[in-house]
Length: 252
Image (cartoon, rainbow, N blue to C red):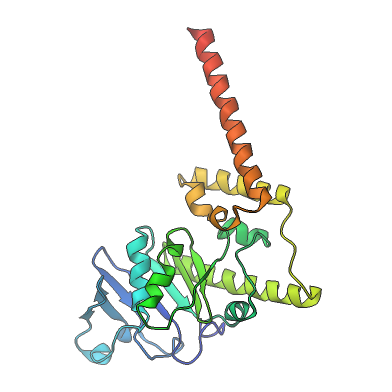
C-alpha cells in the first residue's frame, strides 16, 4: 500500500479476523510502510485491546478507524480482512463528483459489480460505521467521500486486490472524462448482460449466490440493461418450469 501510494504519512489501516472473538489490526499513527509484526495489535470485537502487553506494541493503540473495521465484520460473516486506504484518484473522484457506481469497465463489473460512494463522515468518529453500515452488506469495495476507500475480502490479499481495482478504475475514469471533456459512456446493455451471465456461471460453479456477489443491481436498477437481465432470467425460468411440467405429464 505504501509503495503504491495508496496511503500517506500515518493514513490507512489494515485488519484481519483471527477468530470469532478477535481481530488483528494496525496501530494508530504509524506509516504502513514501516511497521513490523510486534507493533500489530489484537482487540476483541468491541475494539478493546487484548495484546500485546509487552514489547513494542505495549503502549500502542488500535487504529483510530477501528470502528469501520468492526462494523464490516459485524455486517459480513464472510469477511475476514478489511483495508481502509487513501488512494488519491479515488478520493479525487469524490471531490470532482465523479461516480464509480456505473457499469463502465467490464473488469470492475465482473469483479466488484460497481463501486459506490458512502456519504461524508468525520474521520475516526462514530459517523464512519454508520456511513458504511448499509453499503458494506452488499459491496466488497466502496469509497468514503473525501476520505478514502474500504475494501473487504475473505483474505487480506482479496481485500488488497480490490483496493488496486478501485484506484485503477478511478484513474481510468478520470483520464477518460478529461479526454472527453464529459461523462464516460456506459457499457452497452448487451455487453452488461454477457458479463452478468459470465458471473452467474462462474459463481454457480463455486457454489455461491451470484446475486449476492454481483452488487451492481442496487445502484443500477434505473439502467435499462439491468431490467433486461432480470427479464431474461425470468423467461429462462419460465421455460424451465414449463419443460419440467410437460415432462411430468408425459411420464404420468
